Length: 127
Figure 1: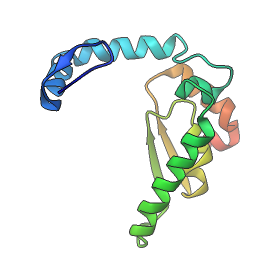
Figure 2: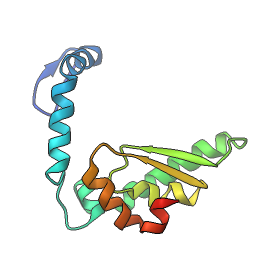
Figure 3: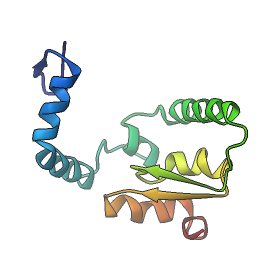
Figure 4: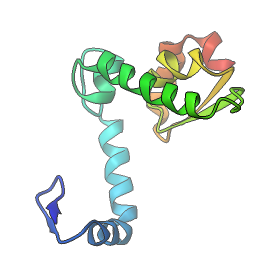
């Protein structure tokens, strides 16, 4: 049992998922609007994506997690990787492009994709 970020109580995770499934279109529209309106705000791209100045800690956690996965699967080829929900490409820039030949970014917010070209550099963004 627990509560969501709006204070609604759910008796189980399955109950929460069922509610989310019923309201998927509504939630997706609200999410798009929130990100289009600056998301967390922040004084830099990293803060805008995670809501505080803890970007380096978050990136380090992503590095450790990915390195553990890669260590467990040494035969895994590192040609390409997908960053789903990429935002401005913070994880792509600091983690994925350092471990893979190519990273493809999937981001529904066109504003953040435009920012990603600047953040990554046009040359890296076009790779």
